[in-house]
Image (cartoon, rainbow, N blue to C red; front, side, top):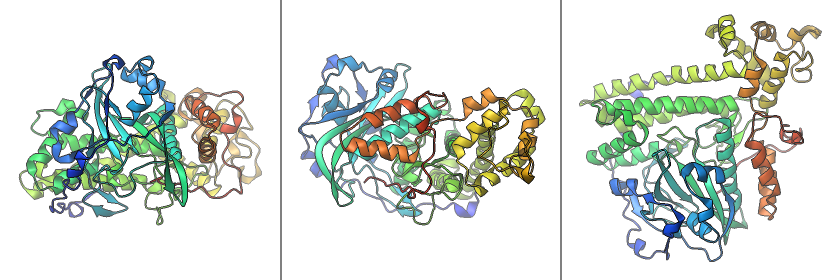
Length: 531
């Protein structure tokens, strides 16, 4: 994976407008002030500093909202006292109908490449940034709504259904428990409004999302497209302050910002691949500057290992397939670098060569992160394991291993837990998982090419493996089962799955069904954006 100067071109400078719909902002929904007793104060940092990328707006106000999910752990992390937000005040807060002091809701403007095609004006069509909350550590965290009604950027009805919002809540919590950088949901509220989806009327919902920020590659594409260098500088400086404050004021801070985003995304995508996650819609408006996973629309986790695995109903060509994610990330980062060209150097050629130098580090950063993670998954991260298997030998071993996984369509998650049992001395751990070579019966006879023998000879640490390899992931069939039940009003399966996924590395007695892949012979899993 590498970039070259020829692949980096300045963006079109036709200014995409945020003006359409500004007059309609006077026709807004009624809003209440959140009582001071709730103890929540927001800032409006983005809205005040980057008005060119924001349209003041208000969320729609349903008549009888009902909180479906509330994230106690995240609320505590943010310094929110749930006891000071009783119902129905909690629901109104999560809907953006009861605004904390300092809140100035805006729909954010951004552009984006969607499946490779450039759209100069996307933006929050059904979402609002309520503002930023300063957590107990002093860090700003965005509070953002999804499904809160049409905005001037709307491309559809502006609403969301219960199942996709609960899916995003569930996936964000699962990824956080797995240690993957992610946005998270503070809560989900049923609106009582029915929304048309796939020829049916479904219950509507709003999700309240928390993120380090909602700055995206698409935010920079929009700012660059405005043709106003001062706006681009302000956005870049804002991103530095939020995500690379050590660079603030430095003369080379924009090069440093590009380097930081390249590094963050290389690490993030490596973690996706290590846990078997397929994002499904890696458009540039879905790539964060922070390096957090965002927008869990058509995402899924692989069962059988397959680099070509693609689940999204709209990804007809497999552009965002499991194995393509690193190269797509680099493609997106190249688009990000294009937006920064005017800030990287006084002349275009120097700016392009500077950008290429930064982008060229992506492959090594990704490989280092993936190899470090794979060492842990194979129990070889300890000193003796590193001495026994150097990086070159590890690359050869994992290549042989993944060839076996793909050839025999082996369940990715279950395989590594079985491998951990083999490391612990169970001579039958891989029976029924990997075929034995040449009909042998010894522990090292599993697999092809002798990789199991080489791996066992390196002294893998079984405990290290169990700490790195989850036993429970959001299996696609279990997620759909839980969401279908929730749509019928039964939240038991959703709550149980959420509880299991909160401790993905621990064996949980009585929860064996959550370990297993989908039964063979079932229909192929297909995911949808939910818009």
